[in-house]
Length: 302
Image 1 (tube, rainbow, N blue to C red):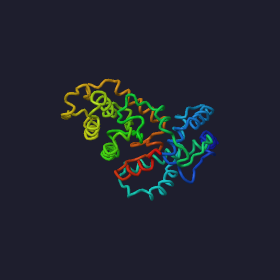
Image 2 (spheres, rainbow, N blue to C red):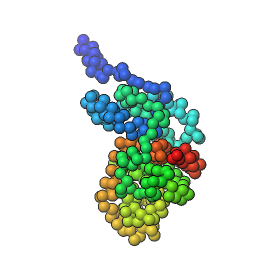
Image 3 (cartoon, one colour):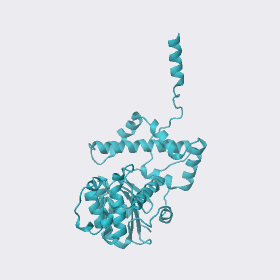
Image 4 (cartoon, rainbow, N blue to C red):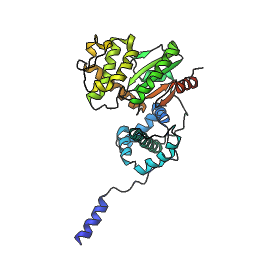
């Protein structure tokens, strides 16, 4: 009899299955999620619903994330991997793509619960609105505010996709020159350790000390980022006179700037790199020369 009582008690103490599990036919894209979170009215509605349930929006998101199952992820992975440009065999890439699906499932459920309707490319955030919401005072940037295109890039010098995209971005900036306002924003993939922040913090220092040559410094940072995280003795002629920017001499203010960018990115829903905002359009993932030209053509101001 006591044994039977224990079994009944065991099952009665378990959390009851969720009755409100929502799974859409198709997931919102990362671009659409970012656009939704950039809307003040949508964000206010999401925060209001979260507050009514006694939690923050961030806590709500984390709870929903913990409840997404592998079966749910696999359902969308099976569908979406067919549209990939080439077979993905790299396990890190597969893990990132599956995690992206997990996050998109989370936001689809949060949007559904809050009554926020999403529609691909249904609205945009204008350049003036974006430039008011992000801090560009201390950010690396090139061009003027009245340029034909405004490009904001979130990236990390430790990101391989960011590194591969960088030469094509540089060529676009050289080709269109004053027609583009380019702003670089930090998004550390490893924000929990000082080593993970080092390359970006060093970049902030190099921008402060030698902004004229910053494109070259960016190239060198991409090429030496892993050595920087390991505090190896790096011999780069362009950095020899900039002792203040050496990893062992970096001031805390540069790390603080990187962390500020990360908080700002979270407010826009940026969750992976590289992510670009170009004249109202969000682009997630690496770009080459051809795709950059297409993006600029599609986002050209009238």
